[in-house]
Length: 510
Image 1 (cartoon, rainbow, N blue to C red):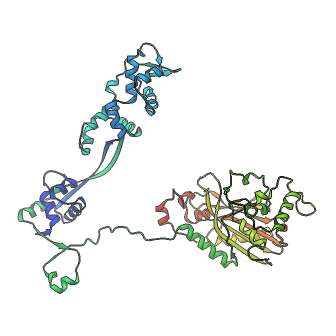
Image 2 (image 1 turned 90 degrees about the vertical axis):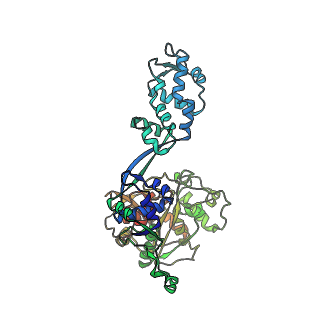
Image 3 (image 1 turned 60 degrees about the horizontal axis):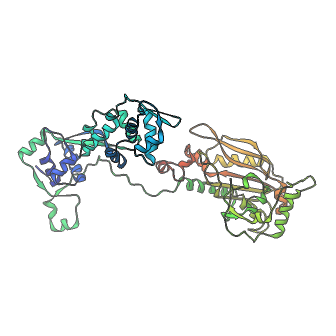
């Protein structure tokens, strides 16, 4: 029988009576472990070897665990010092015993935490009492550490700890004194066919895995042994690049809105508070404009804001708009308005466009949108991130109503297969009426908030010079992606905790 050299070496090293681990087989055969493993499974497929697999748990001492083998566990040292100080008869000041036990730094807390747990005594009002009947010399955790230290080979850890209770091992792992390693051990034995093959004689031959032009030219192909291919073997998984699920969703959103007649806006991520909040009739003492909710930047203020627009916005804040307007009568500072922060919503872009600053004065009807990143000092949870993408949109036309706004959402979300959109009245300083949007999660069945919307108030539009109705909204791209992909946690989509397997397998459905 002719076989490749690695297979012949493995066959000669294997035993018909004793199970041999592949690692040891590789050493005896003089092969790399991966080469030996491949040869073993090829011989198994040919019926010449049997392979047995079993899961094993091995333990390894940590650096801290090794320190305690010589010095002793902190709680054992504390107990010995307590006995020497007579704490088994009368309570002794804890500080005195700690000093006698030569405990320092973290060892003090470790000793105190485990002293009572192991029944070595008690601590009350700064005094320590020891139980004279406790047997610290046979501490099971210390004994387990010593047993493991006595073996040189990691493979012998299983035998060394055979009599140690699992609870003790779990405790040592939780204390970071041991590390637990789980692995699969494969052992090999010769089959009857393997024994017969060795008895009849096995000849090593050099096997090649491909036919080359040189072999054809020289005629060498007639004399070489070709490696057999197992077409049923699992091929290695190769993952190519893929557009991120959020980018897929964003591009789809843009396609839908352009198809609905919208044009795209863009603008700065860091902008003057004037565009981010003041134009939106947000009072400067509003909680959302404090450092708790915004990211202010230590950079020079923005100077290129039309002075007449600043004056009109300030007047709206102080005095209101129209005969019934009253304003806020709250502090208003132009310096604060010109200060720079990361935008908390892309409505800052809407203010720039509606004011005519970006593309000149606009005549109705107009439709604009953006899909860009915003930044908020929120608490991270399943539906909130510090930075996320907002789908901003607005329509300027004559005689708009809430029905037009709701109908726009129905048409938009239908493009993503979302038909159960619910509306809830809401308050915004810049829109009236206002309402939030909710969609039902396809996996959990829960309603999650997916956006905020309303009709811009006169206090917003008049300072901008807009004389027509404007309906506007801000929708969450990540939450739309949650509804379309079934993700239950927004942090699975992007960020340091993103679920890579989910991102690789997720499909965006429309």
